[in-house]
Length: 128
Length: 131
Image (tube, rainbow over all chains, first blue to last red):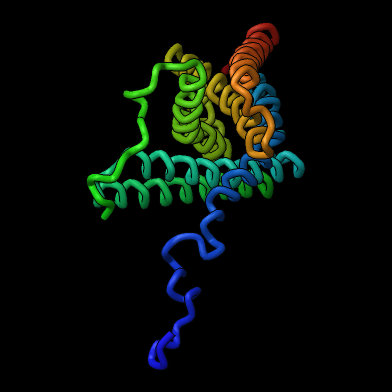
């Protein structure tokens, strides 16, 4: 290191690979996956009950505090997991830079919107 | 930019087709299908919050032949992605990399997903329901 260059090797490495953040995507994908194993099984069960319910029964089902909580957890974990997964598919197969960035942003925005819309709907039902 | 002369690892077009490749591609395909299919859940929740008329419209969509095919596809996609996802999580902790075991767990994932889908739709038809 010269006298004028006071940057440490870590400073030069940051943003160019790991620097202790490279595994973040991988780990988040696994963490949301583990959360979704029981949540997806629960969702299948609740979907079966919704399939047999009329409007009043369906609303009562989602109004239940435990179901509202688990449904919110499922929706958040599912859209997060979906964004992480689709991101990798786009990285792998879309090689036109502007199209890749456009798709990545669109997927992020749509997943965020989907999660927000679902949570708002659940809150309206749970409090209504 | 990477050097163009750099050797590349062989891609799908080079390898002889294998059973486990089909499973891997199905995992991605069902993942994308689920990402799109979750819109159905959002629509259901929004209509449930909006009122009986909106909910009836979504129920009618689900009960139509096209809706039923979509729901069946969504059910199997979820079941397969769930079963094969557990297989992936097992690999993440280092279990099941042997070729024979990889093939066997692949068959188990396919079989379990089909059985689960069958059981769910048997419940829907036996016990009745709008969707």
